[in-house]
Length: 159
Image (cartoon, rainbow, N blue to C red; front, side, top):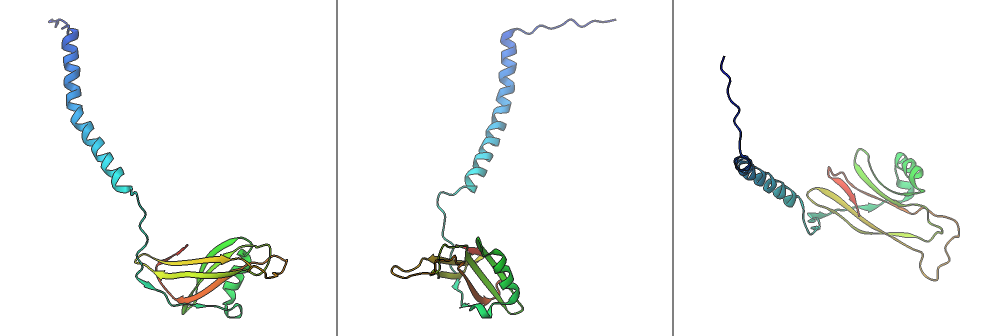
């Protein structure tokens, strides 16, 4: 029977082995850290670019009597709060922006823009309050606007 004697390592040798292991890990850790920083920095931007307009979209404002019945029902269900919906029939697409319950009548809605980008259809409207000097009805109103345009495959972005 042969017994191997235990080998004692001095503290200086122990520190040397520890440093040797750290030197092997340092390049690996540096590479991982650099990859993480690169991934984080490429996903972040400091400025938000405005979408590039491809073309203006032709549309018409739909009068209440010309709104498809299913769309009228959806508007009626949602009109108490602000809502943004789209609806398609066989030929057209309807885009609706409702501003919810207002304290009085006399409100109007202005279409600022309706345009197409490579990725989306942008619909920008603004609620205008009763004009100064007008005497609006004192009962609540539910202003909304419905526009009709041709069908587009892009998602709609309401601004």
